[in-house]
Image (cartoon, rainbow, N blue to C red; front, side, top):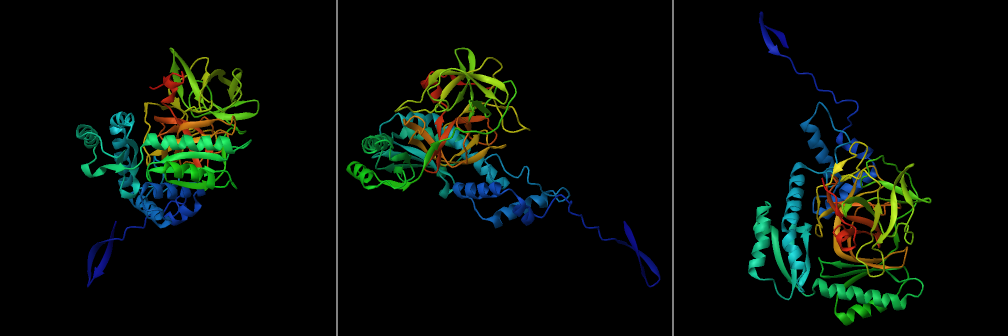
Length: 448
């Protein structure tokens, strides 16, 4: 609209100042929104940003929110939709970087699996302190140059550069560290009496050693002596450990899918993934859920979800805390995320690497809870059966009682499976790799 200005008797049209765009009443300023957000959203974002190597301050989160508001000033910003698929509040550039890291890890996985069969392989991880560089380690000497070239070619094809990959010579192989892990558990079995003194043992690829968590009050001298004889470095701390089956609420209508809560006799767990076995569909939960019971139905809400079977991997020395549940019909390769996304289609699986993200879908949260992987070679004592469970992955997502058996995926979209949640051991969350289903006669992951 033009205003009229009179100058020495002459009317001159001028542009009127545009009225200020009012902030919608429902869209508070970034700093206010940050203060009003659920504490878990802010805390999880700060934790994940720190673990992933991004700036982790509340001022940075407020800056991100201001940037988003500037893009859509007439709409303002809302809490919903602020968290990206990796579980944190971030920028578009950070999302692109996360996609690069995910693509890199997925692309090199076939070659890494080949490396893992070699005696001198010592693990791999994303070094998030150095911009997500992939570090591949061997004890004593690196593999043949043609195999290094094969991995590098896969990395370059994924969109990464030569500087995004490092081959590193270290002292101890994964085989050696697993042997040391077994020695710790043997010591624990002899020293423990009725209570095994060790909560968990994990390979720490970033330090090329072990992380050992002892029960509170247990003397460290015995386990230090065991590891000293093997010349294996270790970080030893105290903590508690527990499988996470308990009581809560959940319900899911047919068709059957993963990521939902199940119950039996006032004890509650979660379903991980739908699987195919011998031409029929079944589902996975944690092996410690109703351990020792091999029949009877489990429910989701008031409806029967499926039936317990005798196919359970949880025994002493196992590599998986998983069991198979038969379902009558209607199983789909879906994952229940929340009320708005009840049928995420599962497309595949990926073990990931230390430094990659892992997200839990269980009965205790409406949305996925994400963290980063700290080990892909961990072990713990099941508080249900007293069994030592090897071959676990450890991550930093949050969980609670009743989440046992829940689906662990690569991101909050839930379409790429990582494993089945077991519990909390020394502060870390342990889960069983989905690939163990074929090892323990539970079929293969159902995909769509």
